[in-house]
Length: 130
Image (cartoon, rainbow, N blue to C red; front, side):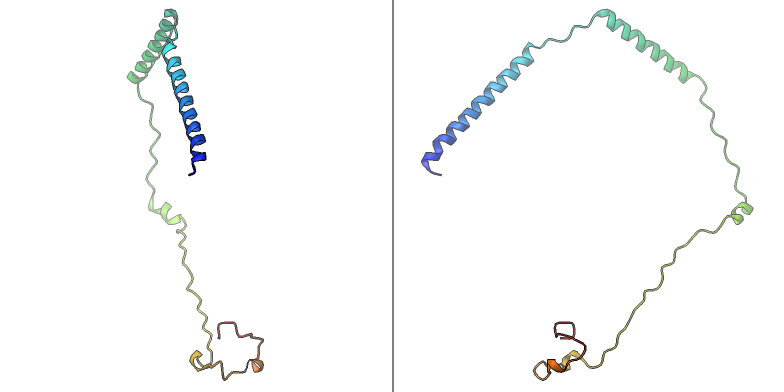
């Protein structure tokens, strides 16, 4: 870094640090001056009475009879099981393998002895058979 760049960068960092200090100071001052909200005692007493009524209702419900359970279904007979359709079982088909036989082997191919102009089928010599 050149010296002419060092001074402006140092000044910008100092200004940023000063801005942070001012922001922190204002935040702390706001938190210290905040007072808890004053709630009238009548409102607190009203909420306590409502909570007491709800608590009494819950206790009454707990002391009462539990709700009736649904009826248990009858046992399934063997006749019903026999009448049910059998489950579907998926069976994968066997893979189809196609084998193509070619005459000769790739080792017998010699590019120097082979003339591309006599080749049939329009192969340009850039396929798998090279």
